Length: 411
Ligand code: SAH
Image (cartoon, rainbow, N blue to C red; front, side, top):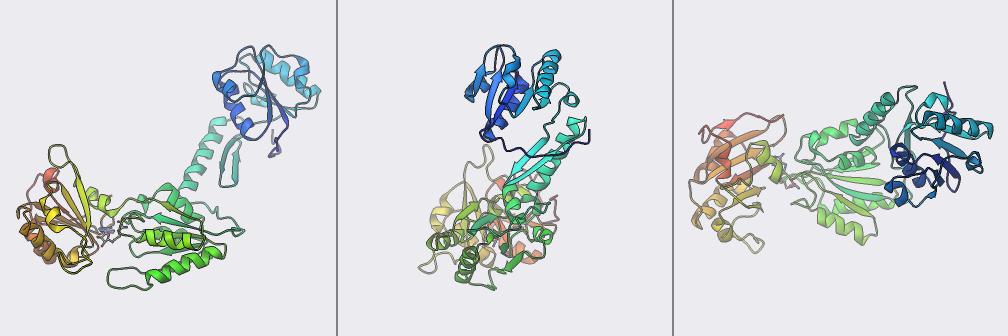
């Protein structure tokens, strides 16, 4: 059968399901979701069907059951009954789906995928597995943002999604983040976000580069907040694509507040922070049974103990026995290590610097705490990097090659 694909509006319309077993259960749910007035005819029905609170006629099929139905689904385990149901439906000019022998019915149910207002339905001729496989592949491609699903009409109300892009490898953004990027009208992107995924965007997507780095701010935070709000108020779907997690040293909270203050709907999509990804990518478990049961993540972008803005409790940090993770610490690594040692952390504590974690040019330098800054400087390893301090640095690293620079072992 070549067939003629249709999408049925079943809202409030009677659909007769003959059969009450596993196949019927799979059909009744989506029919109820489509708003159909479902009647199930079967001497026994599953608990799942009962839970859907549809009308059940607890007996065998009778010819008059098809009266008033727009569609009939025959899914008993008896081919004879299904054939009889299909025959009665045909006589009444009602389309009938047969679960046991699709080709003997007058309608087929495709493999379906519904997402964000899109419906994809696939029919594989007489091969339902083929249809399911293609449907699943489309589902994965949609998740990866590989298909052009951006709505052609602009949104009535714009919105902002603060999306954590992960540490840099484009494979390490979440499925939801990737999907939102694929559907965006505007992407406002940071330097450390996974920029690779932007290459796939259509030309008419506006990409605004904040060029955010420790030393060079192309846009101030105020300007970034303003552009997010302005584009959203113009009805655009705005993705703020950030490195790592939006709410970890990312000023995502400020962007959130700016959107709320302007009445712009805003959501946040968590990302894998470099605080977690960089140690993992270097083979350093942040906790390890018998070695460390806690870890602390700290920003090192202020001089230890200098100035009223330094809210980091360095003596307290030096006293903890767990793992210490430092972000934005490369400019002051010497002073930070000295402060930790001064307040009691052992100079021999293993430490590591992981630069450009998860990217093809990732570098790792390991050395004891009192020598880590010098070792990194000698290896030419600077920002952006995550510093890890604690005995966990050595647990998976059996060769002792302190101070040596490692090549990328990632990917
Ligand atoms: N929100 C981000 C952090 C932003 S602050 C997150 O959750 O990861 C910027 C700092 O993050 C850099 O100075 C560096 O310390 C760290 N960083 C970000 N990406 C990194 C990467 N791929 N490798 C190593 N450090 C990284």
